[in-house]
Image (cartoon, rainbow, N blue to C red):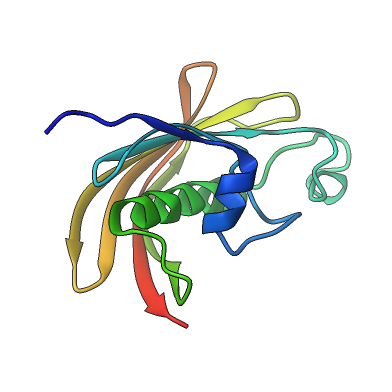
Amino acid sequence: MSEQLNTMDIQEILDYLPHRHPFVLVDRVLEIVPGERLVARKNVTFNEPFFPGHFPNMAIMPGVLILEALAQASAILAFKTHGKQDNALYLFAGIDNARFKQPVVPGDSLILEVEAIKERRGIGFYSARALVDGKVVCSADLMCAKREI
């Protein structure tokens, strides 16, 4: 099978994800190989709504939002693998082995890498990591479940 590389801009991402501002956490898909992997970007700006409270004197992106960005990237990969269906959602179903290596701050470009591991009974298993300047800032094993709506 030959690799098929694709990109997605924010308008196409919004066609696939149900999230909207301020909760859509994927700005651009840089590379996608359906059924295998996805690389995306989240530009972290000082204008993010969570920074005034996390933390007022030292702005740090909450770890749970880094994980949510990785989950959204996993959902995009699942949709691109199985085809877009208007009556289906991919929901964050589980997380294992989450690790945080360094803080993510305004001005960082968060690169989201997701690799499909396996699928069982409608649940996809993914290996995910987030990087800033080529350094891993977060890694986790994620589960994403398909649900009819």
